[in-house]
Length: 110
Image 1 (cartoon, one colour):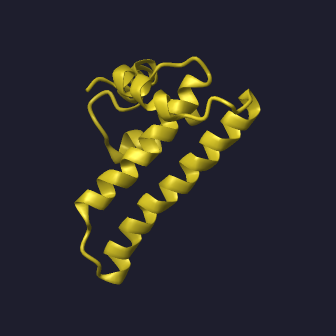
Image 2 (cartoon, one colour):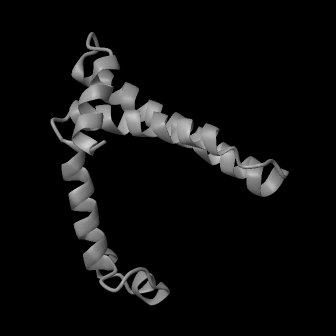
Image 3 (cartoon, one colour):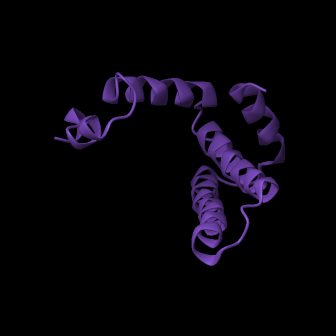
């Protein structure tokens, strides 16, 4: 499924009664909450000895993606644009792929 199709389908389940500020807050807070659930899955695996449940991880990542899709949509941004801009930024930052040297000597943070 392409990102814009996902975004369109995800939008079917957003709360259309929210005002713009309410939607922004709801999706931003939801995103951080779901990201915390992803982090908790990893924490339990790395530090508590739990098996990493791939199905649960997929579900939590899907929840993160839902909030990202709707946060972008409420700002009239499509997900493919977000993805393209991100890849463009990463290509400039790491032209030969990730390296510690490029990370340490990033020009965009000087």
